[in-house]
Length: 519
Image (cartoon, rainbow, N blue to C red; front, top):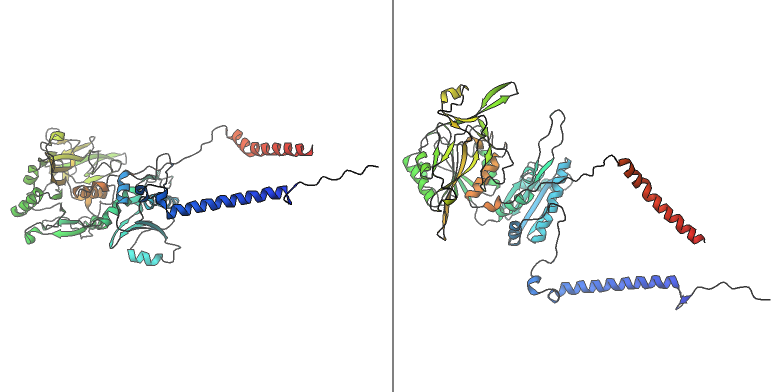
């Protein structure tokens, strides 16, 4: 009688089951590979020169890539150069208070941007202080005198500059007033704002801006809505500049530390000595921001003509529709067109307006053929062409009865602000440049108007150009992109494919595997 068949035994390898042996081999191989990687990383850390040439070793070897379609977080070459040359530690603190989706987007965009800065320089550090949750927030807010949420402080030693959320991100105004919608992000200005702030707080010399006084000019220390310039003065201080008043009848000279002289709408004539001092200041590579109001005689007009600028004896007016029912007259002239100049290149998509402004003319501007030793005049802003004119009948103007008279009134578009430069590179020799910005009104910077539209941006850009700090206004903002997946009429079929198709395929495969094993 034959013995019953015996059950086959599992094959063994060195006394272990086959599956156990394979599993052990995988674990040991993984541990060995991990040990090799750790050893290589340690050697690379201790002996980097073995793996990279010496000139590579002095640079950072980690790289980040921006895979967004528009290179949203990619930094400009100018920013990279500035960040890599930093020798002083710069701290950037965002005082964050989440109140809306826009605030969350602002923080996210700024965090991603600051990672790029930190990757470029070990001297840049960024942190977010949650005003609601951080226990140290109250002390930091008091220390930095932060008055609004979502403020960014840029610090270097004793120098500091504060940026508001509007400095970093532009938001559209609400749409239909009867169907209000939350504002949407339209422009991300983070790189421009942060790089400018870094430049401000790391400059060796603190720039000084003097405001001329003694002739009825606007006061940089006054909080009066119609006569004060305290708001724009604060903006200058936040840009790491010193602001002082200057009375030439007492000083009898323009101080040597005067980087920019601001003449803010004198209402009475300057003396011959004062005009002479301003003229000599300009001749000696000085920088002036002059605002001359309509219907005034300041005694500066002949000096301006030497610099190829002539003031017209008019007032720019504009006919507007009031609620679509009747026509009216306004003295608050919006910008109709911007010129090609660093002062306005970055604000040409923004609104700006010039209240009670006179027009200017360039006397022999010279264009591109003008030599560097002669004043070159470039127009910055012009009035709208439609429904606008330069009124010369001031009595009718005050009665609001003015109508354009083509025989005597100036036709639009009218120039409201110009930039003048003389010097620079003459015959291959750098001789320094005299620069001046001239505007036909001082009202655009009054406390009442300066924060409306882009008036303050225009002024600060002009000051930076006068100081030859064009690098602070040369970085374009980025346009936020929204990606939406729109489902068309075939939504039902697509839904069925997603909800039933994929699980169905997996189920069929599972049944097929189960049946094959049954066999």
